[in-house]
Image 1 (cartoon, rainbow, N blue to C red):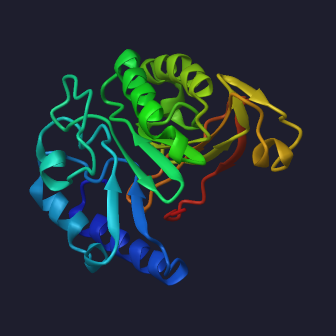
Image 2: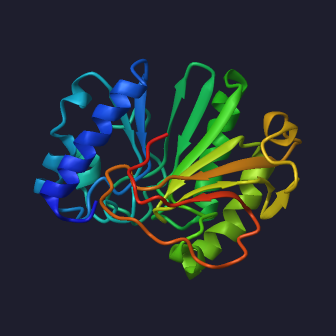
Length: 248
């Protein structure tokens, strides 16, 4: 969200209309954070939720930095399992849900305690992991992105701490936002890219133990885009910025 409520609302509604046309059998929508620009602004929340899509399509919302500083987020969005690790964030904590054979574990990455997130992930995997063929982690603050946030100190801390954890725990895919440029990583073992010459081949379809795929989403509403920075980004298999709303 950019904070221009009318423009953001119109762009968001247009995206959801196109999503419905292209993916009519979608079972739910996963939003990777920053539903609004100002977390206490009810006008922005009204714009986000005004589309009729949410009368027929379930929403799983992740806490972003813009909507993570107060209670409005958790007052608008109920989560399917009790939230844990709220830390010092008023918006709530981590939660999980199971869809068919996919376990999705949603972190509130405004809480920078890796130890708390690790405890949540380990407990959830111990209790639910055997039921799932795919283990997915989602959170807002992308640790493998290619715009300006990639150089932020807090992002570098999350990258160094979380990436080895996800490899250790056998996570398959990590879905993130925050940096407003589409980026797909190579398979990563911790912070090390694997098979960078292979492209989308067996290394992605049949990854070795400890290998994780990371995807950073661009702006869905078209409210705000960032530029790809001129840097090596040796983890990035695909970088894309066409300044057009994205949905996956």
